[in-house]
Image 1 (cartoon, rainbow, N blue to C red):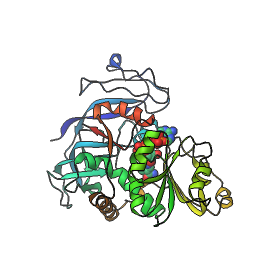
Image 2: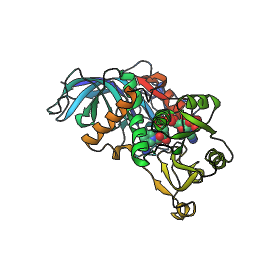
Image 3: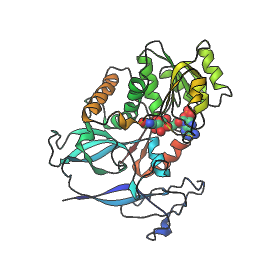
Image 4: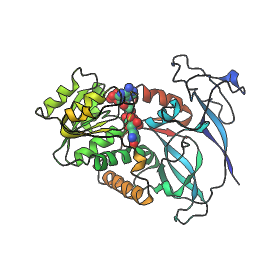
Length: 366
Ligand code: NDP
């Protein structure tokens, strides 16, 4: 028999009718970013907000979770990782078929497994990243091919805090531009989720890390996590400041998650043959760029990677996870949960992440 549980879902467009009178409109939100606060009464209640610009309603809805199908496990979530990609899904920057849930990573306990030869069983503690955006839920079915056991010594909350972001740090530093001992690199959002993990990991690999942050407080955090130099995000001549830290040469690689606002300045920070890794859009997607921009700055390399292309087979996922859990276990990378929210307060968590108010990883608790 299936289970009736709760999840957060997005619905589109005009008023949903049901329960519209209970809608919680956020007066302080702009037209493109409107979320409902989750109805405190819990399951089977509805709220509706009209917005003309795409996914615009975060609802707490009752869902019917069927028994796990072939190759699936039913997981009861105990901690859900908040990621910037959830915002891209919600705003429509990354198109999703509506209605949809939200959320790309969670940790929890396996309740049941469908016909499957993975060896997974009820009671296993597991974590996953990717698949359909349905992690903001108390319970769901996931393909066992995406699910990884949580090692002893790592709590469910820490697993949800580190998995997607830590795998991202892994491929950035080990695949997109493999950091060499002695390299100097530039890393944006150095006190954020991915940034906190990547700065520690890069230092562990022998790099000198220059971290970009927006506040002094974040600068202190970034330093404590391995950034040797800090650059403020509003630095009027960021490339010069960065070059000064490298004796004028420029850095070996830039890991830029900000996107539109920083792209050109980031190219200007690179040494000849340096690598630009543009991997996020927190300020918006990067505008089209002419290849000549790379030539004239010293035959640069440019890549725009996505995590899921680096963990696209079971074998690659397990190898990456092992590397990640190893650097956590040996103390090279500490997981810092900067804040937690009740899952029902996901709207607030989104607003804080977008407003640059969070540090480290953020975990939603069902
Ligand atoms: P973070 O915790 O790093 O939060 C985002 C941070 O980005 C903010 O705290 C802020 O730090 C900085 N920032 C700079 N400009 C803006 C802006 N205009 N609006 C909001 N924040 C801004 O989030 P995540 O760790 O979840 O993700 C970090 C980035 O990595 C995102 O861009 C995400 O898309 C990307 N990512 C990409 C993946 C991929 O495979 N391509 C996988 C996972 C994440 P500060 O105030 O210090 O500047």
